[in-house]
Image 1: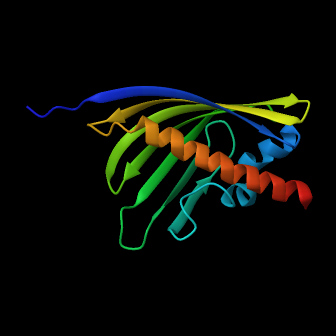
Image 2: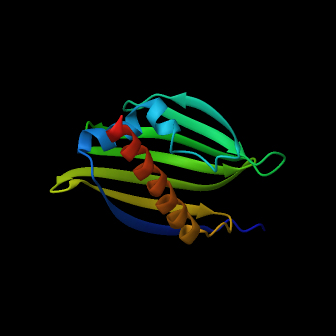
Length: 156
């Protein structure tokens, strides 16, 4: 009998931005702004599918190195409170193998310096793909790219 293990993990990341919550939120809500920071490395081929930023809406992006493993992100927005909170569930696939399903919550709170963003992710890693540490590291990398995009948006 084939085993199908499910490994659960969660993490929380806090990050401060020198911009108001509305601007940081817009980096998630506006498709052109999000395309600047969300996705794989710049050298990857990318295909942006749906981007319906509304409760019940979908977002999908896929890509990978030329001739290499393709990564697919497929999300559904579960809750959106403008400038305050985004909750979405998403799956990740490598080629045609689903490796995880997660629930992510992003909270935006005004602070003395601008915005305190808190991202909490709860995930299940499927069939031996136990990589919560890499997921957290990758998410931290995305938040670095988000910070650069927010800085660019603030100066425009």
